[in-house]
Image (cartoon, rainbow, N blue to C red):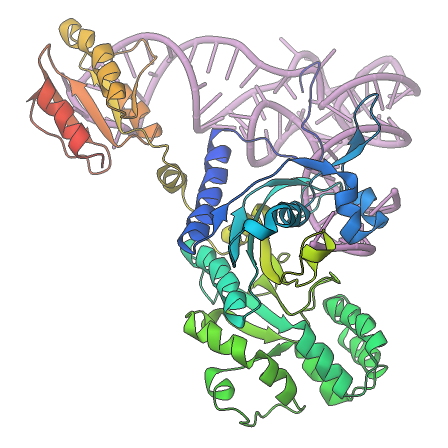
Amino acid sequence: MAKQSYQAPTGTRDFYPLDAAKRRFVLEAWRRASIIHGFEEVDGPTFEHLELYTVKSGDGIISELFSFTRDGGEKAYALRPEFTPTLARLYATKANSLPKPTKWFCTPTTFRAERPQRGRLREFLQWNVDLIGDNSPQADAEIIATCVSVLAGLGLTPQDVRVKVNHRQALADWLTSRGLPTDRHGDLFKLLDNKHKMPAPQFAQAIAQFGFTIEQADVFQKGIVRVTVDEVLPTGQKTDHVVDLTYFSEAVLPLSKELVAAGIIDWIDFDLSIVRGLAYYTGMVFEVHEASGAERAIAGGGRYDNLIELFGGPPTPAVGFGMGDVVLSLVLQDRGKFPTDEQVLELAGLRPDVYVLSNGMPEAELQVKPIVAQLRKLNIHARSTYKTTRNVGKLLQEAASMKARVALIVESATHATLKNLTTGEQTQPTPLPQAIALLTQRPA
RNA sequence: GUGGUCGUAGCUCAAUUGGUUAGAGCACCGGGUUGUGAUCCCGGGGGUUACGGGUUCGAGCCCCGCCGAUCACCCCA
């Protein structure tokens, strides 16, 4: 627009004050849920040696990374596209001295050199939660419960979002028991992963090529296998599904019990088509989706018992997930759950506690700056105007637009009234020390 | 990397279809009235119509390029 205009790079975002407050709001939700579930915050460098990312994913990943070398240097680096390799590196380095389990979370900025589209940018925040050194279903359930905790904390319900759970090893074993050779499992996983991208008949035909019947294909087509508590708890109880899901159900039975114990079974669908693209998942896998299927996955993760070893650590079981801020925000908006501006400022801790103004009398006006200074020494978020007008109505309007909680109106050299800007209630003229004392007692 | 759609003020949109000096609301800034967030009045800053070429007597409008946004494909850790 201007003669010389600089645009933000493709796929990045500018954060003006309200945008920054919204980001803070999401970050605080993530941190709160992590901490109350006993996870400790870690972090690492924003960029790593390029090799760290090719170890797990191969050279094909390079085109999706922002990689670079220092001018005159030789080593190749890359902005982190995910946190897991860094996490594995951190753990492997100190594995012997870390407790079991080790529970870590972080909220890093991550970068991917892909073409941006809805729900996907080139720079974004990704909440990572990992539980390392425990291979129990209880650990699986705790990871899912931490994820659900954030969703619930943001006002989402099981009607808004669904947690789709599967178990890779169980599914693989079941396929083997149906006569499908192990070396074809990968192809079937890939087919399941792409299920929603093809018409139903085409999918059924593709499934048939793996030796499954029409009825069995239909179960994959529907995806969701509802495992209610009644079906799960009494072992061996028949379901009315047309295919034999006994093996599958037995495999997820311990996990189901843990999810019931964690109080989150209402959020869960067992879904045979959730396989996650990554080859390194070894057990439970899950994704969180908006209930109607809109948007991309909100979160995804699972068990990766071989990965720590791959990055040079001792053989260590682990389970974890990642959640990006972009899709999460979209879903909150879709479901009408995104907080108002005032709520964002409130929860981000950015609302002014008090807006100080005078009634325009010279002796009252002289008190404004000292009062603001005094309040700030008391660690109170205090503001006053930069305008020249002393029109009380205009100044109160400014106070309201700042979302200040209280207006302190200096009436004379010695007295002031306090006005609650939420309720409109106002005190009688009060001696200044008493008015200030009221502010320190009641931040509300 | 491929394709579709779209770029006018900070935001939402106008501009009689190619015709004079690109307008309005909101927002922002200044002032006034009413001693209390409202209403009302006056004034102001802001645009190389994303950018660069071309056609034309004349381009916000048509053509080409480029950048960006958006949606989808590829991919999705």
